[in-house]
Image 1 (tube, rainbow, N blue to C red):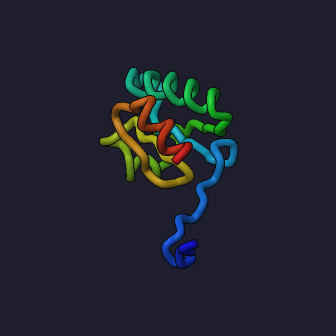
Image 2 (cartoon, rainbow, N blue to C red; image 1 turned 60 degrees about the vertical axis):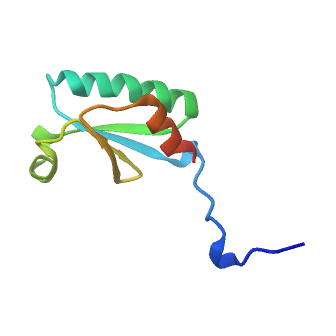
Length: 95
């Protein structure tokens, strides 16, 4: 039996229930509303948590993301912006 060096093993990913998706947007943004529908569906199916942040209430988020909203983060890392694809988000939470 051949054993793989620990250096080359993949580190296990967290299960979806331990992941957090963040939607960064603003009120009145139809793309933000569309993104929320996808996030609610995928997170609901997988048991992942999600939160919503409003760039009009946070100057740092506004400075960083105002041209890209909606922006989706997975565990604090940018995953997507403008349009959220259901299959891509699902893969990000499960692979």
